Image 1: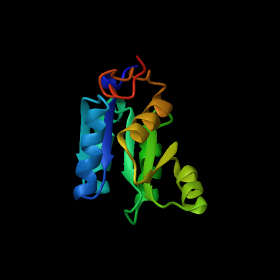
Image 2: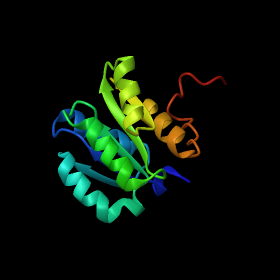
Image 3: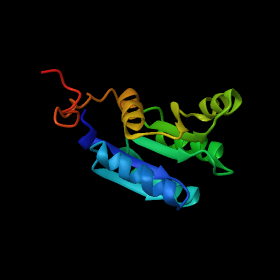
Image 4: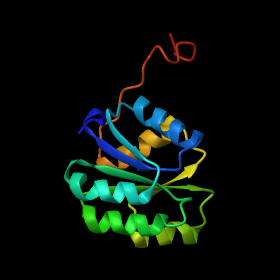
Length: 141
């Protein structure tokens, strides 16, 4: 499966961080992306669209983020991959997220490379070859 074939859904607070995450996901090559600013909105959509979504990303700073993960896992089943985003997570937060049904976590701050690695890990997506022009001054001649 290629990045362009993934269907992602993100529930995150409407702020700069959400826009940055959207832009990073787009730069990874993902074409199908739905963004929600509330868990209730996303869970309603999940019931009707769960079969087309591959990865669900949830902002761990929501007060009900673990409940959202558990509900998404229950509705989406084992095929839905769930990634939770934390700011400076503790071991307990990570363990609680995994118990709730998350497959993996992403710690802030993150970069495009980190997000792409997590998506690759979750879906077994083939990695894009680096653009040789991107580091023209670092290449050996």
